[in-house]
Length: 113
Image 1: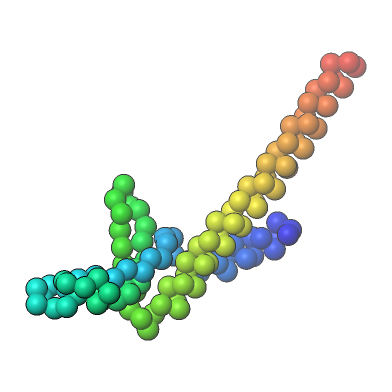
Image 2: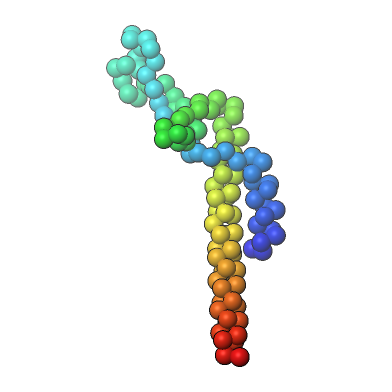
């Protein structure tokens, strides 16, 4: 993909991206008499969480069921943002390599003249 297309897509994905992963968990409630404390199959959930690390600590944000699709889309936008960054870095690396090769060739011509 061309640099221009990648930069345009990068701008679009950056509008909705949210860094982190999604995890689904079940939990026991705070009521000791609830069946969730006796039978793991009766635990509450599954509940969706957006997880990330900040300041060296794991963080989590509960995702209400009605916002699950939005959270999935935001996480997918983050994944695409990362992929685009890798593609742009590869293009930048190739451009750098070409510049350095041209500079080396120019320097060699100047020395031989």
